[in-house]
Length: 147
Image (cartoon, rainbow, N blue to C red; front, side, top):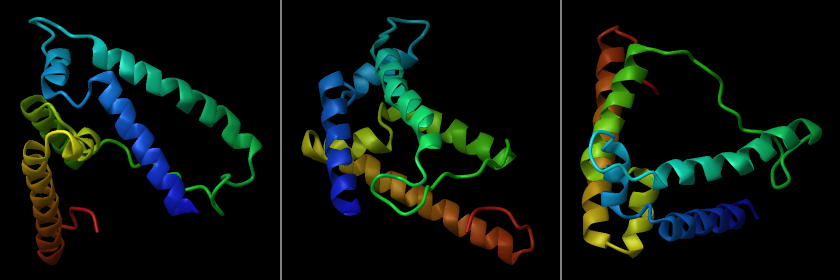
C-alpha cells in the first residue's frame, strides 16, 4: 500500500510540475535571473506547495501515526556545516545552469527524455563521487562525508 501511495504521490507531483511549467528549464532560469527578465512563476509554485505542508504540520500532532505507515520518518537537524554549504552552492549552480533539479528532471523523462537523462546521469555521477570522497575521507581518518 505504501508503494502505491508513493507512486500516486509521485505522479501527482509530476503532473503538478508539468501543469505549472516547472519542467521547462527556461522558466526556472527566468526565476533565477533576478537582474534580467524575472519570471515569478516558481515563487507561486513554491508558495502553493507551502499550503498543504502547513496543513500537514498542523495535523501531525493530532495523529499518533501516519495514515499509511507505522511511524513518522522525520529527519533530525544537524546544523549548518561546510559540507552543507558546499552542497547547497553546487546544487544551486547546477540548478541555475541546467534549469532542473531532481524532481523535474525525473518528470522530464516523459517530456524531454534525452536532456533529462543527461542531467540524471550527471546527478548520479555526482552522488557517487560524493559517496566515494566521503569513504576516502573516513579511511584517511577525516571522518567527513555521509554513510
